Image (cartoon, rainbow, N blue to C red; front, side, top):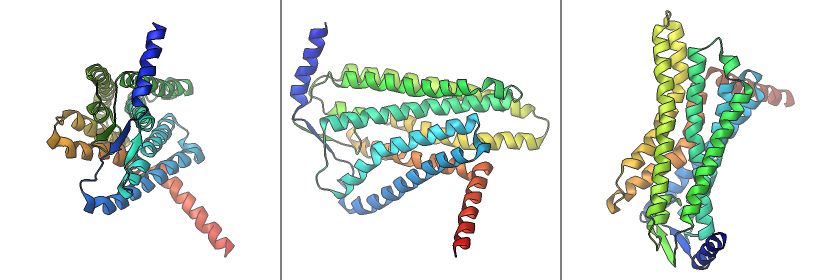
Length: 325
């Protein structure tokens, strides 16, 4: 058994040795290359600064050393990594003529993209559970959401995403690819890779469909259940002030969830035909490039503690600057 599996991979290595992929990206719109480059460069810069800023703000303000912000700092880290897996290659392909990516490069990009997308899916579900405990059991919050449980939930999100990603890669590597293949996207995502394989990709497609459906449904069920209980608890609150506070705490998280799952479900529902490739590319841009930028903006703009920390930092900088002069 062991001998046959190693020989499969040896054969596969020989087949994939000369394989290169060409990421078509947005090359059919030459007049848009420069404007798109500038837009994506701006988005990537805001993403890096926004997410690093968020992690830094949470680290330096002791007031933000709570479970909610612990999860938020991991969400920022995942967004930062995710964006860095996709954006540099996308930017490079908008300015160079040679849009090739090696076989290992393509597989690695897909592998890391999977890890971070699946982790984000479950981190958003963990954050919904955190909100549920905070709103529905406020007196037990510090007991229930212990540091041990928080670390465990985050570790479980990363571990499960690693298991899923390794499974996808294993089944992708059983396929054979030959020659130069054109991937009609700007990222090595599963549908695009299997579309250019020389062998039957049905098992690999089934595995990813079952896994993606399970991840999507299970995380959405956790989110929906948490928010149904939150809604019932909030509606029972006697004061409108308390109601408003609870809703505004959840609003930013709900916005992030809606945008993330909305774009993923949109990509699910778009039929994989020639005419829909543009829609798929736009959808892919949204959840791979735009969402990592939006998350820190959504959370910081709606959050009093984050805004206060930023204000203090800026005031300190200005004070130091004035003192120097």
